[in-house]
Structures are given as structure tokens and as C-alpha cells.
Image (cartoon, rainbow, N blue to C red; front, side):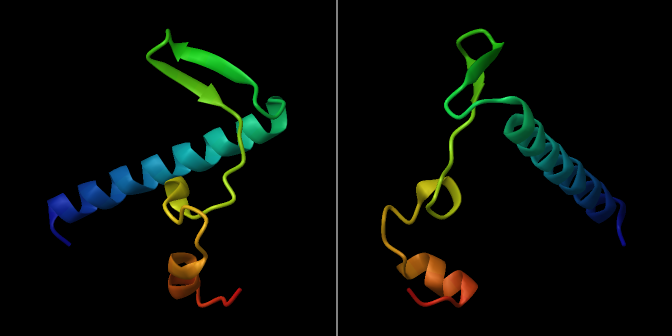
Length: 73
């Protein structure tokens, strides 16, 4: 592998690990809808559940989710 590919893979794994760790910490230490400021009003963490696809992009439709994950609703 080229150095750029290894660097990209390393950064991707770190971001993924940080994402999973953050989610687990919030699920175990926050009440639903609880929020904390991380960087003033610029960045805060809030515990909510998203029942749609990533970032709510399905907007109530199950169609895109069905294609990606092969499920029918």
C-alpha cells in the first residue's frame, strides 16, 4: 500500500473508533434529550435517537434504506 492509503485508513479507523466510543459513552451516561456544551454554543452533544437512515436522509421513506440493506417494509 502507498503511504497515503495507509494514512487514510488510519485516520478513518480513528474517526470510526471515536464515533463508536462517543455513542457508547452518551448511551450509558446521558438521559434522552440531555445535552452538554463541548465548545460553547458552537458544538454540543445531545442524546437523541434517529430512527431513519444516516443523518435522517430517508425523511420517513423506507425506500433508500431498503435498497442499501436489502430489507422490505
